[in-house]
Length: 118
Picture 1 (cartoon, rainbow, N blue to C red):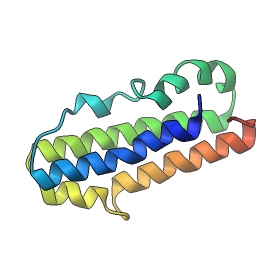
Picture 2 (cartoon, one colour; picture 1 turned 90 degrees about the vertical axis):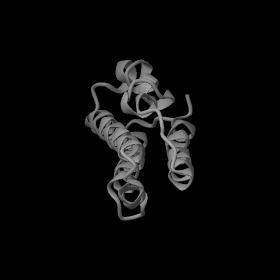
Picture 3 (cartoon, rainbow, N blue to C red; picture 1 turned 30 degrees about the horizontal axis):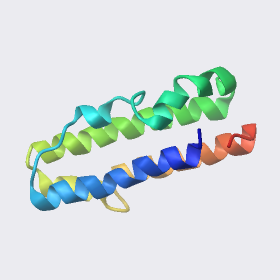
Picture 4 (spheres, rainbow, N blue to C red; picture 1 turned 120 degrees about the vertical axis):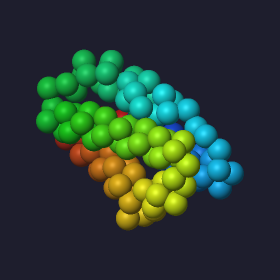
């Protein structure tokens, strides 16, 4: 698995959120809340755990990834509550969602550096 391409899928979620906010529609929360369901999560809870579970950098990535999904689900719930302005704020560069996304990216870099992961 290419860990960078798996992360890119997360990065594309912001576009989906923004489109739903613009159209003032609803979104399926379950698609975002479980960290083990996306490509990166499947790797983290499967092969990645077996290969790198001993690594503190892996534990950090696992934690950051779970937090990212918690916040993605929160954005979806905020959208469904029709709090579109608040959801937009969460997605902005200085918002919680963007910070969680950056934290996952940094944790991926740390794991790659520590364990020579591709």
